[in-house]
Length: 80
Image (tube, rainbow, N blue to C red; front, top):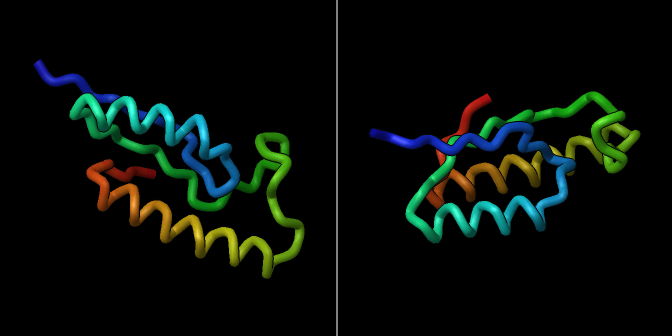
């Protein structure tokens, strides 16, 4: 039997501290989750940290892209 852990709604604007804590528990146990990534969250009701200007959004998305690549390099499987 195979068990899959999926974490949805991984966004550029999420609180990374609890996410990293959960990820550490899973990867520490040898489980590498499937991450459901929302690359450019547009719903401002889901986050208070979405930049209003396009330059701010671009900076955040560029940094998030690097973060997602790092997660992939750490063994996580990325999905959208």
